[in-house]
Length: 452
Image (cartoon, rainbow, N blue to C red; front, side, top):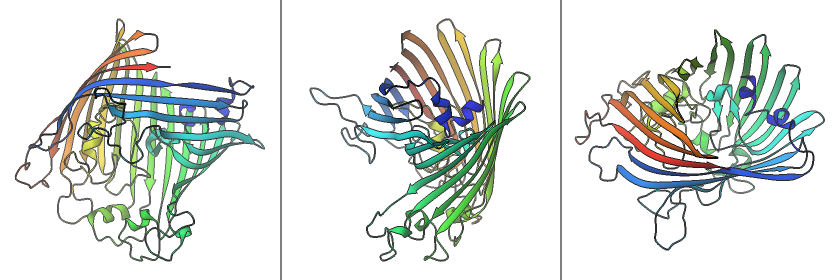
């Protein structure tokens, strides 16, 4: 379990063993194809909300190793979420099936997701570039398949590893005009995150304690997003987190508690700004173990009305929250956020002002692995800004996924996947077309994934 906690933030020591001493380049990755049918909106009158399409992704991983201590790494999506279509034409990385060939910002062909190097200088592990970072059981921060740009230092003292990271969240203007207010200068539009984390083991308990501070300068886009009481000042926030994990009676338990202080210099003029200004907390527990028929897992979390994530959460609670892969529909993520799905539960992020529980099972049936999951989530406060009016479209949701997978050849996995979600409306949706409706979402697919 300690290895799982450390991998995202201090991989220098873990990677040192088994890496060839001579310079070499290793390549790997995967190709994935998915045939999918889904309805991913809650709008009743919508001619484009049902999709039947093929999708594909090609990811390449390149490890460039100079020595056991010094190596660089590249993760790139040659094709990320492309719809498979066309006759006698080149392959394009289409952003949507409704507009073939169009590409969203940052999602073009050969999009680089991660690019960083690792080395050791005077006994200190060094990581620099756009790297994966995961903190406190993937709940405080999780890179998912993207990256954080900056510099990370790590040092191990016996059973304790210390990590110090500086993430350049937003650099904005570099040597040019400032982003929002003329005359402030490029040094006033940065957003920076400083993280100090300690990972260790005491007896049978693994732990990670983290402090994180984010500073949004006065001319940054982050600070400009708040209704500041002083427009000539920035905004900042800090988080404290503790994760502990152990095995009790054959069950792996991992608990996390996070406190967030709230964004300062906030005029509290809107519900969203009031929520951002408030302090809050999050508590979560993951469990996993073995049963007679296979493996099981469960989770539960509670995020208070005023809690704010460092980034939009990617905690990976279950496939119902995050199906992953090309053409996937992350059903609970869609409804928990304020998105085109029809409005959000909390108008913020996935694990803010929400509580949820869920469980999953993996059962072997011959050559197949059967993986059912069931999930439930509900809003904590329908009026998080204390405005006297409901500001969320949904009050709760329940659903689940069922995945059956088998290896059909060496390195090739075939899977049948299905998902269903039933969201319940709060009192906020008043338009005549959709008022009071409880329209469900669904996802059906068959996929093949070739890993190399």
